[in-house]
Length: 256
Image 1: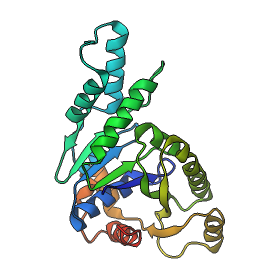
Image 2 (image 1 turned 180 degrees about the horizontal axis):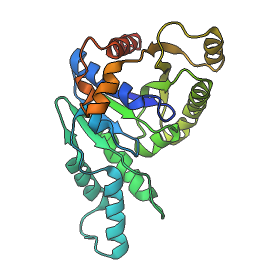
Image 3 (image 1 turned 180 degrees about the vertical axis):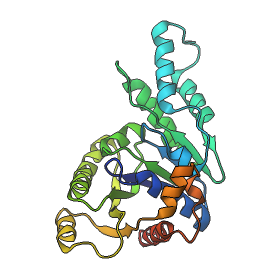
Image 4 (image 1 turned 45 degrees about the vertical axis):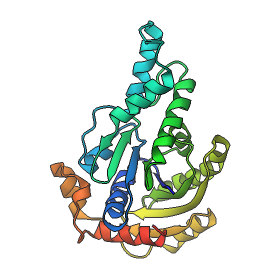
């Protein structure tokens, strides 16, 4: 049985850092292999994990479209087989964690057929893992382009601002629309990043009124800034990291 976990939130809230800590936790605390899907066009999850990245799904899609458009595509090879082979080749393998980066979104033209094939390939691939972890773009509607997998847990990351909470409310609303694309979300939790101590009562009341279940907060951690400055992978944060300790508590509360 595969557990699928998605992470969403507006830009700059720390989604990729939270995703990295989740993968670190699953590697150290749980059995089973992990498939990480980097759904952000900036494709920097690999840097946090210390893994190389040579090709993205977006590049594979564009390359096939160019071949088809120019007439150079080998018609003797079914497109499904071609895309599956290319994705398997693009898979970055690590220690109990493999990575696929989605890359940039579609260019001009129709990519519906290619996207449908890619979703099917990625969904089948995910069935071979104990966990599928999706570092998503800000808008939840993008998940439907990447996978039709049922999402067991969705973490919405927000900074401690009204704008961040408003974005979290919008994401929660969009989760209800995912069912129309074949993706269902079982549990949704709100995580506030860059905050230490109790949150203001007015902030908590607004989150509760929006139906957002707060599961925990993540404190500022000077080690994260140091790692980012030197280019050291965040996956190497030590057990003494305040951020990692707080993240571990959140994952355990979520039943992971």
